[in-house]
Length: 635
Image (tube, rainbow, N blue to C red):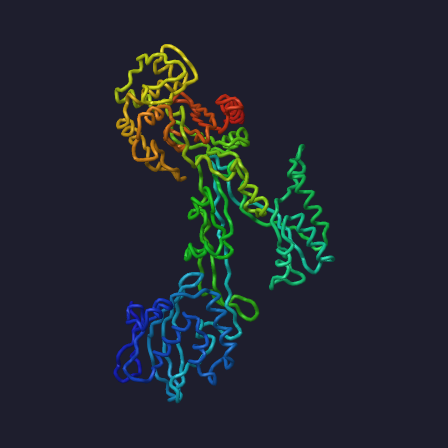
């Protein structure tokens, strides 16, 4: 139902309607405030026009100009600084934006010196949109109309003794769970080490000890203590450290790192002024076993706030920086709640102006099985490599392990410069996510080449290709280039070639298939395309250019060399490593052959540089141990 509006007092009886659809005074004015208005033909500013111009200044935070529009003699504030302090504290505190005003009515009072204008005002705040009707009164002076200012012009219910308060309700970040509801990332407790300045007995000696025990620069600690908000009784947090629980200490064989942390905290507490309190943090129970998979969160930076403006982040927010924490940031983040209310002088709540309910983040449940994830990590944790486990029937990914790894909890507690440099300079590259790379597939491609040969009719599985010994080249045009293999056997048929992993057989098979047909069939299998998977994997390739360029490159492609690179989930999760500077890689693939098996499983593992440690047999033994541990746990 439309509100009836009374006519303004001007003689022409023309209704004034000020909103976003009316003409704009300037582009900057409209962009900053969202208020548009028009000036009448007469040279004297009307009360309605003064009202709208006043609202423009609110959006621009131009409080001095606002004060100049008031009549101090008839207003609540005669002091300009007090006026500016009151308005700026409220408007900027609630982060006012997109101010709009619509004049509803304008009646001249009985007194010649005073007029009033009724209006509707709306704007956006931290707690959402706020809209209300109000009335502004004016005095008619020699210099034109002036505003009679009082606190009720900010909010109709606001009195001079009242305060405007903001109450925030941080959203709980969603958990990352495995297929059995085990938590990979979620809320946890750590210990916050801090100082109470008034209890310090020897400041410089204390700072020296803290610098050594917390691996912090002494100047950083001084800056924390000298912050403007710090008083003698303040608790000044310095660093977050792991919480040492009584259960961990009561274990029959407490872990060495737990005992070391307990000893460090005992020494810290012996320093006068040091306190240790519990603090809630994001925690990663499986640590390095899932470091590359889960990733981690960090406190937002100024760049984050700029990049994600308007998405609900503030200086106290965290944001996913890598792994699943970054991938599912929107789902996990949630929306902080916020309430803006008026508080009486006695501290009681007078009225709620705006309320934005908190929306906790969503939990993300994975197909990952953390027991298998951890079993694989424990076997390969010192080796540069990766493992992928899948259900070969459903295609569900059960484990994604990259080794060596990092503990995501370190990023939550705060990495020292020395630790960060150590991670970056480690020649084993623990920060490299190996399951998110493309690698030379080697012999894992041979069954694929066999299937292409059979499909296209280019290869007869019963044909004997002939025993060429351990090295072979097609003809003299190859110069001094030969293809080598490890075993000589007879007959050289497809079945035996797969058993003995014969490079020469599959080089001949690729030549028989031909470059054009091989490219076509590999394209059908998804080479060059993005796999539809939540974690972005680079597309597999068969050449560094658009095509296989030479006969030798084609032959090498037949046994997974040449320029073929495959990502870890392509071709049913088959995954191995890229050959770098002549290093040797070991790979092993194991899967449940029976399609109707109750617990179908496929694992592909690869380790770099296995030439001196047993070749592929090294990987086989590791996978065997991981499966024994996994199935021995009752899976």
